[in-house]
Image 1: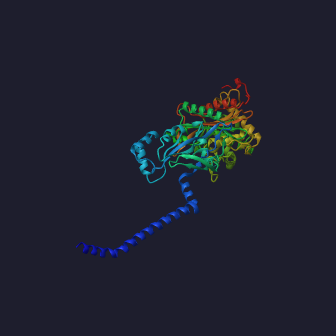
Image 2 (image 1 turned 90 degrees about the horizontal axis):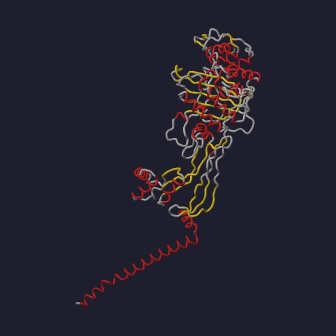
Image 3 (image 1 turned 60 degrees about the vertical axis):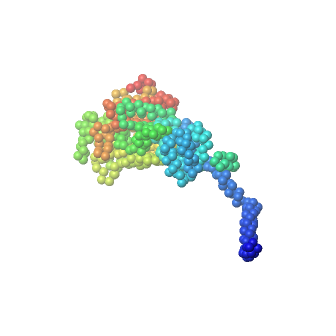
Length: 572
């Protein structure tokens, strides 16, 4: 039995032996081929194509980092900073690398001083992305506790943040940048391209957690933005803002504007507006405070336009300083509209018309002239057209159309109604009176060369007007509150009803004063506007003139302008 079984088994196995041997040698061959391919690949990568592994290794350790370029500084004419960029740290994360442990995420949130649930929600929202901001523009001291956690997926980036040393004092003029350091308002926006720096690049070695191991080499050097020097004097700007704010508070006004120009160059030495805002903390910004009203808001100016209209009349030759105009009985009707004076002033010379601010006198003069005479003069003085400062949103104002201009509008132009100007335009127009008939183009930047100017009126006419305006700023005259101890002043008051979408308001006014000092040798031209004073008087001579007096007095002393009158003669 056993022999038979062995014989049978032997016969069964014999045919399968070659098959098993074949399988063995086949598998051995496959293994040898695979091993050969692997060895060949290793040899190829290590000897023939070494750059592949090198590039793959570099891709996991070498990085190109951006080098931040700081934005150019904005300074006043004396080099005092108005806008500077300070280094800050921005924290960001790769959500795919952040720990999923809730305890770790809560620790990160508390260190960041944010709500843990909000952070968790943001991580989930960005879970398929490789980038999300954790917190932007922190000081290095604020960022250090977070970076000290050495949490996977948390990284930092060096940036710059804009800081405004003057705060609300020069906010509307200088403007602001956004969180990405791009200009959004004011001169920051107007000169954004010039102020913006060009970032650089560098090659660095990092570990697997993204930490810097070694700075290898510089690729492109960062180039900072250009610096901008403004025409304003920060000392005068502070005084202007302070006194304007005091005037607005005293009269319970809605706001106000002040523009001070150098009477010899047209440079803006100060430009203040209220309401304002703090550009370093924009949490609760009043949108009205964002506007630079002195440039962007055109208003009807009222009687401050009378000297400008008078310049056209004197230049025409039809009116001389000795011409007598009968303003009786103190009112007149033109095209069905009644024009009134405060009272019947009788017969007046041009100087008397300006002194008493006679609407009737100006209307009679305007109607004796061709309708384009005063209109052309206003255009020559820059009204109804862009001032050319480059400031975003600067207003060109408006003049009535000459086509079919009614006599009532012709008369109204002469006493400051039916036209719209900005405080900057008005101040620029007054430089023609202060500068021997040459109107100076306003500049928000410090000038290094000769100012742009246009000869608008003969020097003789300018001098005559300067003398007439000097009589207005004298004791017992309408502009006596604009007097500056020790200095002669020439100027004109103005009071005008506010215009809204529903027309002229019966109880809302603007009070203005436009003046030149010293009158004997003009150095500065200043325009003050108080918007809707609600406490007591609203006349320009009572609400705007005192602000002019305080600001100009301080400015003249600060600029070392010698007095041209004794204090006794010039005291109110």
